[in-house]
Amino acid sequence: MTQTMRWFGPRDPVRLRDIRQAGATEVVTAMHEVPNGAMWTREAIAARKAEIRAAGLDWTVVESLPVDEGLKTQSGEWGRLIDNYRQSLRNLAVNGIRVVTYNFMPLLDWTRTDLAWELPDGARALRYEAVAVAAYDIHILRRPGAEQDYDAAMLAAAESRHAAMGDAARAHLERTIIAGLPGSEEGFTSAAFRDAIDTYADIDAARLRDHHVAFLEAVCPVADELGIRLVVHPDDPPFPIFGLPRVVSTEADVVDLFTRVPARSNGLCMCTGSFGVRADNDLPSIARRFASRIHFSHLRATKREADPRSFHESAHLEGDVDMVAVLRELVAEDKRRGKAETIVFRSDHGHRMLDDLRKDVTPGYPATGRMRGLAELRGILHALGHPPERPAA
Image (cartoon, rainbow, N blue to C red; front, top):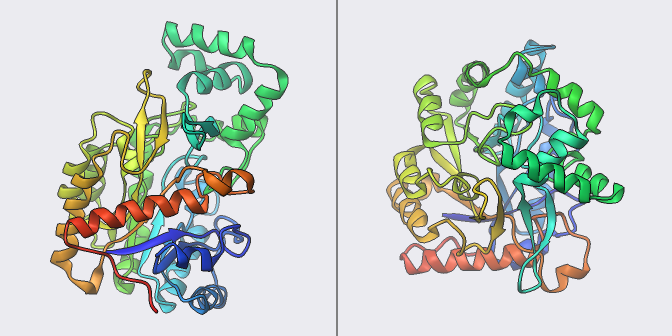
């Protein structure tokens, strides 16, 4: 298995040499400066890869090549957007990229209500609190019909939470939820967010699944020809929010996707944190069932709270994820494949801790917390008799 860390490009406060010192042999990254829907040029990709290689690392996995909202809703310039996506895949393949990550979540990427929730030991974690989302949805966003999505107890709790918040706290919650989270390519005000939600008024889960299938049927033939694996990242959180459907949240969702689009290039990014939020997801079973289609894995752990739709990011070997059992399945698959097509993995959403508490960091992506996670994962792999590739001397 190939150990990596995510890098957000030249502006990332975590430098490439920091990542190499952490023990990774590659980075996973993207052309974050390119607007959604635009083509990634061959020259820009080559320049970014040369920068990474000059630091003693490699780049073979993209995270992520965004799927424009026009493709998710099948509105606007579908043909132009599909052509740009296909050409981006061709330009990536020429530069040695073999795995491309994407997601099909409407409007928002991963969503949290607190980007620096204090843990008992003083470290900071990402947190999703259901009552805070309800308070925002009903009383700040004021989404029409929002009340219908919550039970009486949650409605009362949301009203109390909103009443107890001052203007600064309300503005902070709004920014946290919708104003350009790391990994999200778009930012919104509440008014603009309401307008964007309206574009999904006629799109339920069944229709969004159809649009996902249509997207894959349009791009998988090109990916198959190029030898690229397209890996879908599961929904985060893995349930509908703000009235928007989500369709890659459970094992059954993944079965449906692979059944409808059996192309070899149609694969899965095994994110243990996302799947792990739901108690009804059996993560070792998912890893075993879809092993041949897993080409990239985010290894992190989440901890469900008293309200089962609230959770926070735990340490990598804690929380509700049996990381040893998941890695045992991934190791078995990696051994079956051999070195020709190894599974790439990274530690994910590390805690903000130690010196990073005094630095500007990308929420969820501080150096030290992810390095701790990567070291712990590496320890499991050694114990399983399958240590990852060592960094070059």
